Image (cartoon, rainbow, N blue to C red; front, top):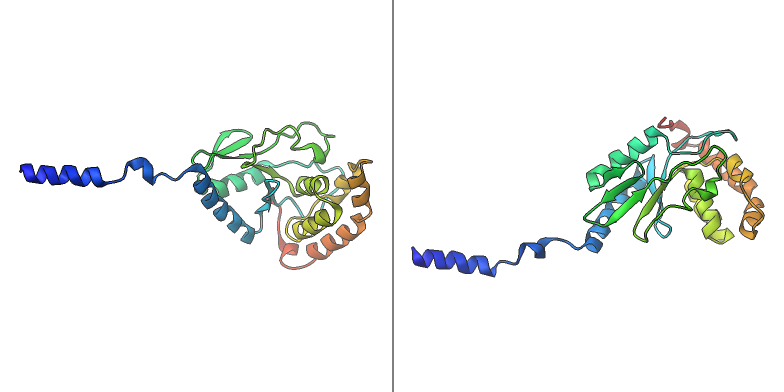
Length: 210
């Protein structure tokens, strides 16, 4: 009996501590990001830009200048349904958090009817490992502000093939700064690329989430 107890004690002592099996946040974050990248295969939700930490959720195929540019309850529900199985939990009305990965998804508040889509994430307290969930139009505005013209155009071309943007609203809020003036010159080109995408399969059959 004593020998058996000693063997059990020795075996327990040889086992690594339980903490050794717990992944560090950076490793867990890498695993979560790999799963998030897979959303590019689904039609409504995707990582729009890893460098800027942007997520895009499909809004609509056609827009009016007066349309309110915001994440609707249906769009939010779709994203929560996708991120929940990955370990994200809603900690507030504007934040989803993955505790093990030390990672958050922010849903910036829509402040006012006439607010510029360029300003949507300006006051969000986002860390480098965090993401912002935006409408496609808001994502396009971030591209215009953060990349040189060629880079912004290339990224928006890819975006509108899956998530069309409200070009009328974007144009209304372009300012006099150099990047905005340069982008105004290519609005016609972006419009033609988006029209081709919207009129083609499979995008032409896509329906709004509501």
